[in-house]
Image (tube, rainbow, N blue to C red):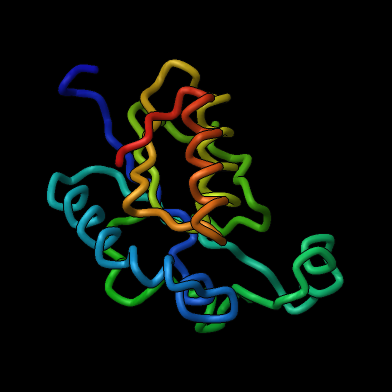
Length: 171
């Protein structure tokens, strides 16, 4: 791809509830500094940065997801819903998504995408595959060092799935 190709970093659901809150894991805590460095790299170059936020409401337990995962999390406007401290940068775009995968990616001018965040095996894989389906000719990559799954095994399985669908995995 040429030097004029627009680069976009998509930071998936790096929210307090997924790091050290209601659904936090040691793996999620362990990637925060890597994600911070990746965001700084893109910000320093002036590239586009998009944060997604898993977004639920007070009726979460009555939703289909709430029935399958009965742990209230990322309730809009709560501390758990917020992006982890130290990750946000000026000029970033924010997407509140109410499902694993955001279906509005077609509204963006994506040309070269890198993805990081949580959880590899749920929201990262969902969004990577949606983007790859909408933009089959662009470079989509996921930095495994900046992602964590529910378990190490499901993290690896998601990386393998994405690789099979022509998403480049950085190790």
